[in-house]
Length: 571
Image (cartoon, rainbow, N blue to C red; front, side):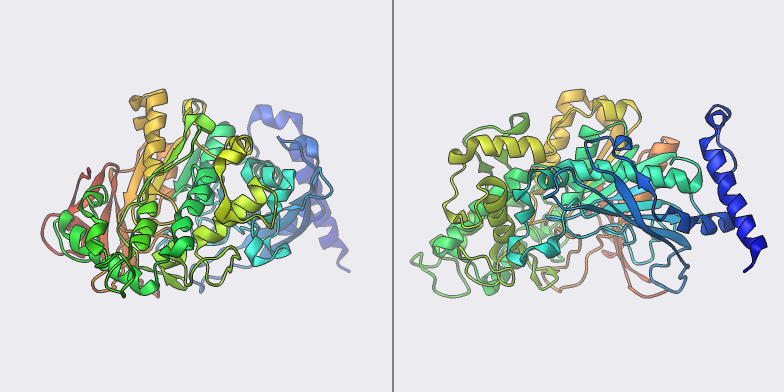
């Protein structure tokens, strides 16, 4: 045994502990940060660390670190990773029937002094590692970890693997697990992560950011609303702002399809071309891409697609019931009573990229129509996500009855429960004054071709924030960008030739620069599409304009951003 090495390591760890517990350090400023070799040696000592419930800002059980290991840099990977300490752990519940909150924290040996929390997606239940590329990242964008950020994420306090695929929201039967999904797990994991970061680097993060999309975008807005002192900046991509109303709108959309209005994948393709024929050139260029997102709806008359007698007579027209199904998606969904923050309506979806490939199927098929006629028995393999998520919300969040027929759902009969769920889940509070007063910055990206969440909901939310705290404050603290034709997950393709549209953009660096240097993002950011292998050749670019503008073709090479001008989009 090398007793000299053992003694040296022990003295190193003792010095770190003494420094971190010295009451004079806080008064005299931080000591020099531990060096790379010191950090690598200290990584394993995090294993077994317990963060007591008293150190967590919400009622909780203790948190504990199960493992902490050094992961060696991989410069050859795409994207590359640095040397870092990978920490896995969990937070115990209060209710013994509730599941653990699992978390992962990644501590780069070369640290920039900042922390980034990753958001989840859908109903969560899968550990967000903090090691994935950010949403809408280009293939050559370095990971936040590679940029020096300590990153962390969670499964939000339940494990989807414990439930059947058709019952993804079954965790909602447990009140603590539902609360964790709503907001509590993200705050708890943030507090635990800062504790671990401080123990490792002997210093707390100078900045803490939240970056999420969809459900993760809702989480980010929720953190700004509920815990405004905890974060310095937030990027919220396609946020599920009115999530309780979204799930109800999903059920509303499926009702006409349950009654004979199912739209087949072949008809979705026909419908996409019908939309493109009427809206494509509104942006000055006929290229199969609808950029003028607010100008399009007025050009769409579904009656022009009506089959001769209103009955289904083939793939070139729509029956009356199919028209009703598509009209439901492109109409507001209104409750018979207001819920949190006085809202009673979820806005309509827009038109613009129904057939972009979206994992297994075209975007509209995956989210709205599904691969087969919907039934009360939800089949995750063929059902649309609207039906899967909507049915789960009704069964496990609202009625708490796994056998309830979601097709028979009447919100009026569940008024009190829906009010409660809206207060718990929806991130609609427009009062961000505390977050902004301490310098917090918010960047929102909404995708106009999104058929999972209405892009108008983000527009409505920023309008509500502006009405509440004033345009001047909002201009200093908020940026809302619209990515035309982008689907829920980001990509878009031309309806006419199937080529990829530029949709990739880095929003973390603009946020960091805004927070630290006071330099707001430009009113037009450049989106790209690149080859996926080195040297990542640029294939095309276009501007992503600040709302209410869209990229209007002004002449020149249509594959270059400089050929477009940001112009107002209006109905």
